[in-house]
Image (cartoon, rainbow over all chains, first blue to last red; front, side, top):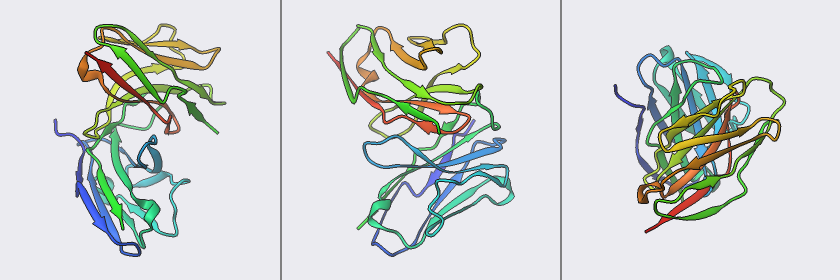
Amino acid sequence: EAGVAQSPRYKIIEKRQSVAFWCNPISGHATLYWYQQILGQGPKLLIQFQNNGVVDDSQLPKDRFSAERLKGVDSTLKIQPAKLEDSAVYLCASSPSWGDQETQYFGPGTRLLVL
Amino acid sequence: AQKITQTQPGMFVQEKEAVTLDCTYDTSDQSYGLFWYKQPSSGEMIFLIYQGSYDEQNATEGRYSLNFQKARKSANLVISASQLGDSAMYFCAMRLRQVFGPGTRLSVLP
């Protein structure tokens, strides 16, 4: 079974530019998560999708971040315009459904550096 | 609001010995799940073990066990017979809401 795929793996941009990340979850997984992990910290949930609907986006900086999950499969996360403090690893995860016992499976992450 | 606390920024353990990584949590939810993840230097997040809030027995997965004390709101991870490959960051996390602790860096010494 293929794992969670993310691209690109690395991205370097200048502040005020825009950037997009792509995630393909494990086949059949209804729930998809985007996390931001700043160096030395634990992951912070940005947004959670159940199929193609948003379950939780309370920590997503909506003035600059946006995410979509068309057709309930792949997802993209966009930052526009980027700030220096957006430098982080962006992790995508998926789980079969949404429940407190569901294990999340993580992708390799995208490392973003904003100069 | 839910919160996870990991009070040990770094831990050292001798190879083949056991080590306990601390995790305390705060939640008003009655039903929740507690997870431990390992993150090697390569960056991927690897699931280790799960404990449900209503589980009466402590979870075990191979060399990993979870010391769950619900009344004290603690869910400590015990790694037995440490191996050099266990050197990594370890994160305690809670669901239903997706909350992670700050992590503990474990270094296994030969």
